[in-house]
Length: 311
Length: 217
Image (cartoon, rainbow over all chains, first blue to last red; front, side, top):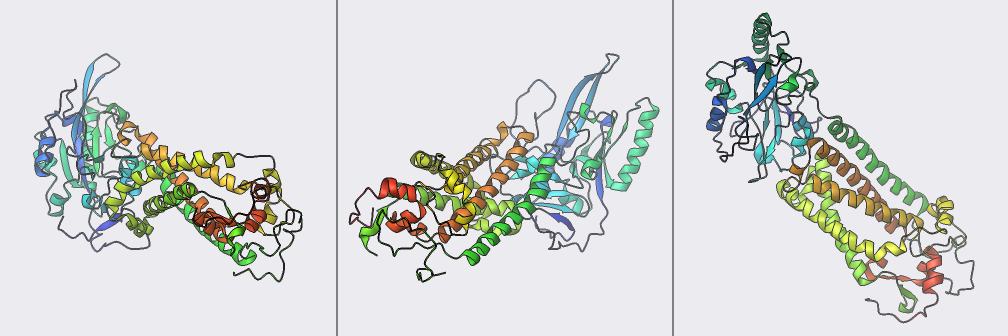
């Protein structure tokens, strides 16, 4: 993108001691709210996403479900998931969910990324990949609690939903929001979207969906893509949406614990070697005695007059 | 120095394995560190721009592993632990303070070097396996994400441990004078052999006559 960003709150692989450009950090947080109860699975959002972002994924094959394409790819940043479910009464229910990046407040991808500036988090909450900085290591895939980023086999860069950061930057809503014909996707400030969600949840509950609720998981600090779920008490019904997503303890251990321990290890090893050398001096060979197998005193204390030492 | 006092300790083929492994390892280790400590990002530029470094790192890692396997075959019989290694362990403090008086029954490699040998063997093997698993271009898609996370952690832990071990190895080479030259030319003096590897000297060096050996083996 040619636009300069002056509202970055987090930048991948960047030391916390060096401040980021935050002149616009007063910006309010935005959010996309997806109300699954209003979704008809038309896939208009998928088309709008491909169109706005100029993505042309390969035509796939039917794999026996309505999910099409079958999965997210480097060129498919959102997919409607169709999950069939029978409730206790044996009644069939179709659970639809628009899958894509959740734009976490504490993004696991950004924590894992080793390439400075390849992932940015903006003050408005958008987590965006700067793909030309991406080295293609795939750490973001391991960091993400939602299994969202995909590495392109064509160019070895990671891709995912940008929340249409280019549209939002000029005051427009994301393409999927603009397109959705049933009004299942809304966009606005995070506070507005939470209010809207509360109204919808109340409506759903009053219509008998007792488990209805907002999905804004605290384990990742909340997200900037939120769902209104009819079964918010069982998010995993919706195509394995994590019940309590969080950055994996393994990833945390790797990035938060092993890094300082490793740094200390280096300092201790180098300092130890240096102190040892200063204290003990070079281990030189005493070349003076003739090589006679009889001599047993060879290795006694080094001669004080030994001048082979060059330490 | 009189050539007649020199003895061949490491053959040319073994020295070539060692130093080609050092070259590849240096590049792999520095690029790996650049990703583990992003503040040391500049280290990765030994392999060019970061994208290129990411492409080259695994291939060089495979080269390190292949050379390691060659070295395993060539060196393993010298590095099996024997009972006399206990003597060295008992005198570890004296060894480090460079004031061990008596013979320590040290074979071609001392017990510390054997630990290093097995440490390097196991850590590079672990790095090889975990590195293949997290290799995005070819294999990572075959593994579930929780397994990849563990592989990434294992790769980092093993990489750090290996680099620290190698720093120790380099330091010992610097500390014990004659070692680095010995690994380059292949030759050490008979006195060096007697002082640092007494059992090796008595069993294999002393029985040979000090021949006016060729400096370049």
